Image (cartoon, rainbow, N blue to C red; front, side, top):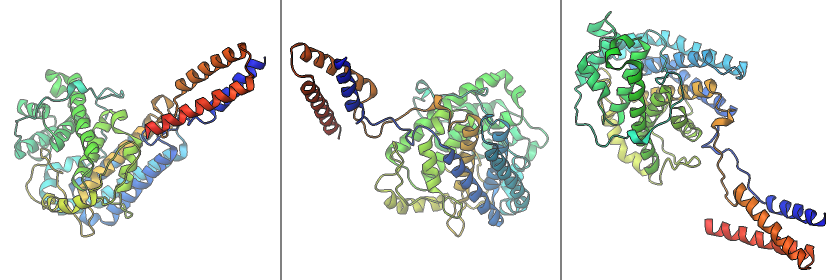
Amino acid sequence: MQFLLWIQLLFLASTSTLVRPQPGRNSAFTPGDVSQTLDSLERLLKYFDKNRGSLIVDSMWAIRMIQGGLEDAVRKAHPDNDSAVLNRVSAIANYAGQISERGIFYAKRNAAVQFEKFSELLSRPFVYENLLGGSIGRVDTSLIFAKESQLKIEPKESDDCLMGTIGSGHYKGLKCTITDKCWRQITDKGQREYSITHQLLFFFLIKHYNCSDAINSKGGEVAVAQFARAFCTNIYNEMETIFTRGVDPGVDQDLVMEQIMFCGGAGFVEDFVRPSVLEMMLDWQRDDGCYAPYDGSHLPDAIALHNKKSKERILQRRKLIDRLADNVNKEQSYFMMRKPLSEAELRDGCMMHMSSVAGGALTIYVRAMLQYKLYTDYNLIQYRIKDVRYTQPEAYIIIFLAAIAILLLVKIGVAPLRCAMRVISSVRFARNSKQLHSV
């Protein structure tokens, strides 16, 4: 009996100093994340509404994506979601619809050529529908492309493929026109950056406009899922490379959010919809709601998203950003470029394309958090210990060995209390030594 009491004393002494695993910023969402993301979307929409005279096709489509994505989030929301949250999401979706109606005139005025080509996309809410049959997918590293593609996709050809899919321009009334040449471009393996995200976009359009019959001979829905997995695996590889070396302000910000928007929307939730990256995106947003090149050095847990040279790089990248800020009325490729589709910088420094993809990515976050109830679904949580001393199994092994030591010492007649104190001191010494080695 006395022996059991000493064992209990040893157990309490050992476990009282253990650091318990806590949900880190790279593990689980919280209800506060949902609220902050909705706050961010509201600020962005208010910025678009206030500056609707400067809206371009990108920003108008982003507003339609926010509207459609939030409506879809409410329709597919997990039944355990708070009704007040769902009501707020519906209200924001309605606000986006109102801005769409008020802004359509200005988008047409500011980007007449692009509007003529892609007005069909702006006519109704848009939803990035799951490309994996509704399931949550994971990337597969065996699908990383061995080399970069040498296929050069001409701007007019890519735009022609897009118009044929959605039935606009000279294809008006003839949607789902997908030629063999277009299919080769859409499915070409080895494209990078914006080219590969825009390839993925075609699959969303095929699904959105019910063009499955047009690709049945090419593999249909099964082929779409296979290409989505391959493309998102390579997009994920690019994104992780950016995170490892540090996000370049301006250029990388836009690309990362577009990657999240497309692959998170495709169904790769666990790989692309992550709390630490959401924290980064919320930090990028200006107080007025828009997005512009970030000049801080935000470092969420587990990912070094900016290195120490971020502020220096902003000055170096500014010239490049200026070159990317094309005149929005130019006849340019809208979908197959290694740069943002068409960036426009307003006088206040707001970047319209960057703000647009931010709206799309934040909407994907809201939809995922509500549909899969990520902020309370502990099946998806992977805990992380910030200050590692002992993991739980190691602690039990130490306790077990200490108990055996006490038993042996008691058998040979040494005072139990003295034994216990010596063992406890040994355990603490071992623990402190381990801490020093881990620093």
